[in-house]
Structure formats: structure tokens, C-alpha cells
Length: 449
Image (tube, rainbow, N blue to C red; front, side):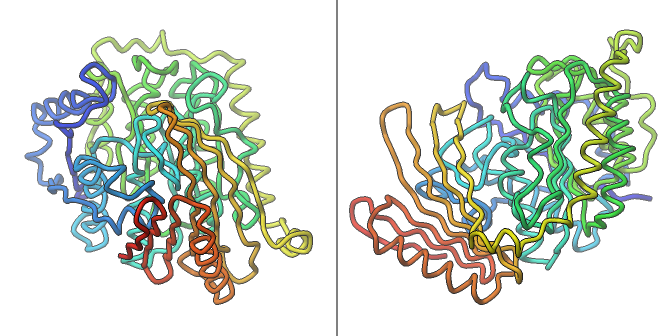
């Protein structure tokens, strides 16, 4: 018998607005469904209560501006903490797998956080992954994002990490928020090929997502051999979702979950509150628990209306072939050749916070290092709709930092503090699990935890 853990947190006191799609009703219909079906009474299901994620849990993953308290409510910390509870239960061997059905969602929250974007402030999965790596020494992790929107925040956080495989399939970014997630976004120089994006044409059906799963995701997972598989479980590929244009059914989702066999699923989006979420979530829970889900059928389900055109099928096959070629080339980047030209890989990013109307400009630099993943610095400027501005400098030291990167990262942090050019300067030292915020606004002060 498979033991499946559940954490259920609807966040009754948090919504972007009373009528916004991201509101507590998203999970209340699911709660009714799983109680009516008697799922919570099954011996295979164990319910856990969530806890608050700590300030350090969040700071291990994010640079929150000005600080963690400024970007989170209690609901955000409970949602992230719910994922941590499932992670602990899994690692203690209490469960075979688990599903954190929590909100607010998280996969659009990037490494630097100036506000809410895509309904997300902090990234529940990424916080959980860094927690697993810190507390349990997990090294290789795979995150499969099945939300209809590109998981751009999760991608951003792990883009330069060769030990985290991130695969996202989603509706083509030319037709849907956040407008990213194309095949050429394949990871930084030290992690090329460990980010794979599968942009799918609007109208993709069960047939399409299962082609991607069978011919790309499962073979890549088999080669990567992760110690743990995380499913960033967005339910908005469903054919009734009001924010997207796909044609996936509850059966399609449940079968996908059965094949993928994630150790942990964490809820992301899904905004067909009555017509999709109760069925998709129920199907996934049954699949995770090894139970029969064949009877989970939406009342209006009509197979004949969920047909994928031959042109879309061909386009999906071409995308999969392109990504398999990227995967096969992943070990052929010579860091030494790149490092000979420059000690750092650099990219500039422009990020729009659609919920809070913030424009952010970033310059991100990554040390090209032979001995570790390389330390990262980010210069970030944010322009708020009320003319408020903030300029911050962030330094991230990876878990496996070599001594040279460790020392140089500390020097960059101290130089930024001494320069007085930034409102806030952050040090994220994952190697020693120490985090600092130096404040230059008003009375100068340093917070360390």
C-alpha cells in the first residue's frame, strides 16, 4: 500500500482581490470533492498540518526587498511551510509520496523579489528544494512544471545549477503570460541542458502532453537519475480553464502523474474553480496513492471535442526533437574556453511584475568556475508605479562553493557595502546557511540570521 501525505491550505484570509481568480475558492471545491469521495478516510492517505516557513527558509532561496517580512504574509509562509512539512514526512519515511495543496502559488517568484508577479511572492517549490538540500544533503533534484504558464521563477532560481533539472511544458509564451519559456532558454554555461522548455501550441490535448512525457521527460529523467522528483502541479492546462487555451482532461493529468511518479507535488495554478480543480486534484491524489482513478470524469467531458490537429501534433514532435538535441549536447560546453575570454558569464534581464506593476532591470554575473557552480552577483533596480525606486546588490554563494568563489563572493559583498551605492546589500551564503541584509536606507544597519 502506498502512503500518500496531503497538506491542505486554502489560505482563507489571502486573496489578491475578492473577485480575482487567485482566491480561496480555488481549493474549497477541491476540499468538498475529496471529503465527499471519502479520500481523507482512506488508510492510504495521511493528512498533515502545515507550519510556518522561517525567515531563513525563505532567505536561503530569495533576496526579498527590503526583507522577508516585507514580501510575505502569514499565508505565504504557511504555503511554503506546507511544502516543507511534506518534504520532512517523505525524508523520514512516513510517506511514499505527498501532495502540498497550498496557495498562494509560487512558481513565478524569481531569485530577487521586489513584489508580486503572476500571483506569486515566494517560490514554494524552490524553497522546499533548497531546504531538502540543506537539511538532508539531497544533491540531484528534478522539477517538472506542468502548469500552463512557464515556470519562469523556478527557472531563474536554478538556471545556473547543474544539479537541478528543470523541465517546464506550457502554452507557448507568444500566446500567454509570462511570455517566456522557449527552447533556447536551456541553462547557463555551467548548467547547459538542465533547463528544458517545451512551448506547446494552444489547443494541445492529453495526446500532446503525453507525447512530451513519453518521448522527452521520462527518457531525460532516466538519464539524469535525480534523487527526488518534484511536480510543480499547475492544473490550468484543463480544457475549462478561463486563463488559458489548452484541452487537457482530469484523466490526462492523473495518467501523467502516474507515469511521472513524483515524490512530491506542490500545487501551482488552475482557475477553473468548479469544473476542473476538484476533478484534477482528486485524480492526482488517487494516482499518487496507487488507487483507481478511472471514474474521475468531468460532468461535461466529451472526448470528441478534445481532438488535437495533425499540424499541432507535428509541431510538438519537432519541439521534442529539438530539445532532445539540446539534452544530448549538454556536456559539450567547454567552461575553459568561455573562462579564457572572461571570468564571468553575464546577462541582462528586464522583468515585469504584472500584479504589482513594477519594472525591474537586472545585471546578473556568474563566476565561470571549474571547481563549483560559481558564485552569483545581481545588481537590481526596481521602478514602482508610485515612483518609488530601489537599487540593490545581491551575492549568492552556492551549497558546494569552492574556497576561491567563497572568498571572492565575500569581497564583492563587502565592496558593495562600503560603496554606499545601494539601498540594500544581501549575502546569501548557502554553504554555511548564513544570510545578511545590509540596509543603507535611513540608519545603517546589518541583520544576520
